[in-house]
Length: 110
Length: 113
Image 1 (cartoon, chains in turn yellow, blue):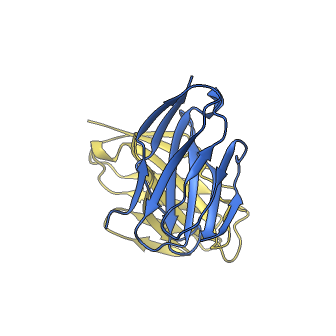
Image 2 (image 1 turned 60 degrees about the vertical axis):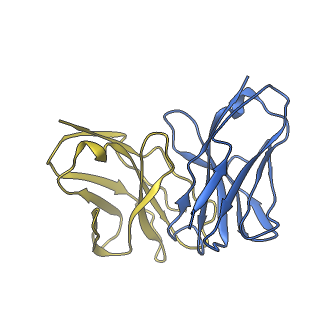
C-alpha cells in the first residue's frame, strides 16, 4: 500500500487559492489518487479522484505530475466554509484495508 | 434515496455493556466498512465487507464484531465496551472497492464510562 505524507495544517484567507500537496513516493501503476473533505462532526465527503495529469470538477482541481510521486489538490478562491480536514488516499480497487491518515487541516480566515 | 444512515447518533455505555451500531445503505453498494475516529486523528478501519456474507478485519478490529446478512445492512457490535472505545464511528459504502467514491454516514458518537 502506498504511504502518503501531507502537511498537518495550512492557513489561508478568503478568496485565496489553497494548494495541498500529498507525497506518495511508492505509488503503484494501478493506484488512483483520491481526496476527501471532512467538516467537523460529519463523515468525509469525496472531492476528486485522478490517475494522471489534471482533473477538474466544480469543487477542486487535482494536479498529478508525470512521475505520479506526488499530487496537489487545488481549492480556488476559498471561503470560510472550506475550513475542513482534507485527506489524500492512494490505492486501487482491491486495497480494502486502506485507512485515512491524519489529513491536512485547512483553516480559512476572513 | 437516503444514502448511508446510522443509528443511534449518540450513545453512552458503561464499561462491560454491549451494543450494536446500525448502518444501512440504499444504493445497492457491495462494499461497506466501519471506521472509528478519535479526537484530532484520521479514520481507522475496523471491519469491512465486500458483499453479503463476506467480512474481514481492518486495522483495529479487536473488541468489535460484524456480520453482513444483506446487501443493505452492516451492523457493528461492541461485545464488552471499554473506555478505549470512546470515539466517533462512521459507516461507509461504495459501489465496488476502496478507490471508488465512498459515501459516509453521519456518524455515531459513543462514550464509554
